[in-house]
Amino acid sequence: MEYFDNIKKQAGKPVQINIKNRKITRDNFTCIAGPCTIENYEDLFKIATNLKKIGIEFFRGGTYKMRTSPYDFQGLKEQGLKYIYKVSNELEMISVSEVICAQDVNLMSQYVDILQVGTRNMYNYSLLRELGKISNPVILKRGMSSTIKEWLLAAEHIIEAGNPNVILCERGIRTFENYTRYTLDISAIQAVKNLSNLPVIVDPSHSSGRRDMIESLSLAAVAAGADGLLIETHFSPDETICDSKQTIDLEMLEKILSKTKNIVKVR
Ligand code: PEP
Ligand code: MN
Image (cartoon, rainbow, N blue to C red; front, side, top):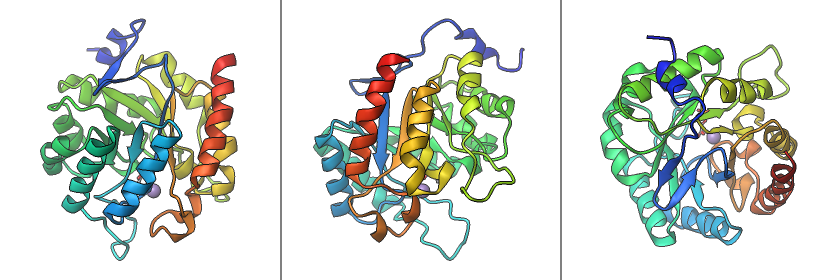
């Protein structure tokens, strides 16, 4: 077996990920937005309603959180899954939420449309293999210290285990720079587009950790070929309990999206 055999087999064929009646492909642009962490039902519903008003069909929100400190809020867990399910049904939107361990895959696949593997778990092969047993699309974030080859091999684990519906997400890597939280690796976008035929999205929120950089990084990512963006958004960013410094409001999101539409047209 070649090292990314399954991914290569798809080379030249457009990968189309179908979820409910939407498609995630390299031919249409996908925007996923929402809070870092779900805090309660009402706020999640309000955010998703506002996203829908500006034409966004995908909402995100963590309910099992991988926090660097054990003393920080760890998420609403199963209660949050119920909120996600209810909001996606009521508003007919697609939900995205992070799965943090193999034991949760089955349960989460029943409540959440798209499961996300966070940067800290890219090397968690038992989790990746478990994700190969379900059919929900999986957003695979790049490990913060992983090479492109390691990232694609992680995708290969999911695909080889039976689930071809993988979306790659560049979310910044660790460098010596600390003005930003991580360093967005713009060149990785084209690299994984060359080496695979999976959709590639970019997360400017976790890569920069800075609200004042979300717009420029989003535009740069789209100009560099990103098939979508994943952006932490809240109607009142400063009041959020997790990642508030990088969370943008809905007005800023709308402005970013209108600019990205123009970039998509000319690239
Ligand atoms: C997230 O998207 O909620 C998240 C924790 O991202 P990352 O794993 O990239 O840090
Ligand atoms: Mn976050």
